[in-house]
Image (cartoon, rainbow, N blue to C red; front, side):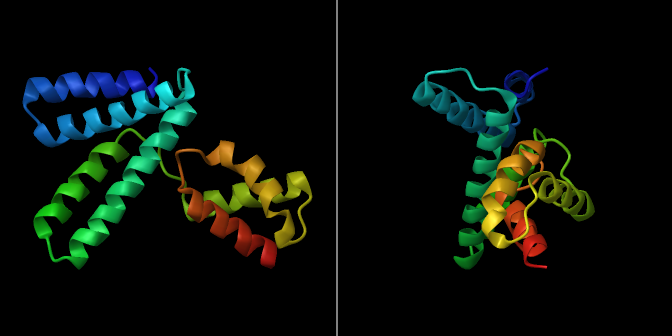
Amino acid sequence: MDIKTQLNEALKTAMKSGDEVRKRTVRMALAAIKQAEVDRQTTLDDAAVLGILQKEIKIRREALDEARLANRPDLAAEAEAEIAVLQAFLPQALSPDELHALVQAAIAEVGATSPADMGKVMKVLMPKVAGRVPGDQVSQAVRESLQK
């Protein structure tokens, strides 16, 4: 079952059970996916949907940080709940060791020797880790490996 179907099923379940946080969060995610499909004038595949879900999680993490700075525990709790709902639709995250192994394999595949080759490594690596590790962590791991 693809991710959009899972989201639609989760929305139906949340509506039946009266889970307002889950219902609201899944609706926002589906709206973001639908907007991206309209903008691109195509149906998104699972990789693109995962990217949108990660973007939505990132937005909520930023909101969580801002809520904590503003001393608003109510908004922080809301953002944490939304993040938990969205993370349920992402595949299992990679451990640091798994990420390091994939980075080393990608470096060997493209023959990268310096930080100048980072773009080549990222191009090969990102499709393999899509939805499983945030892009900033991937780039940091690649940068560290190439600087050694």
